[in-house]
Length: 158
Image (tube, rainbow, N blue to C red; front, side, top):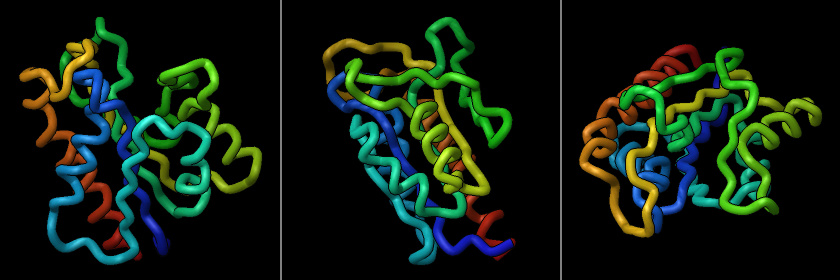
């Protein structure tokens, strides 16, 4: 199965501590050498619906985000395709479209990527501060490695 375009999207707000996990993870992923031009890194920040085209325009998408509820274990969670939680809630305001809604719209349009992967961690600190907490910083290498392994597997299939 050929993957002509793979998008890796980082979601989050860098001004709220661990809420910025997705963007920081994307920055680390972007530093990895050797990916071809078919792999695109998108800093999605808190753009909501404006990211829909990045989901609909690819064969596979990985989304980094801090969205697991606080009472979960502090570890990296990887959800693929049918494993994705039915409702992924992460909005900075009631006017934004969240990831669940965007995936639903892509499905309705018949443009859902063949592979959809969510890599997330439970936030520790969500205060107005720049930088990840030490606990979440320790999880970054594993999250980035999970994404690297997936992208390399997809590229090997192409």
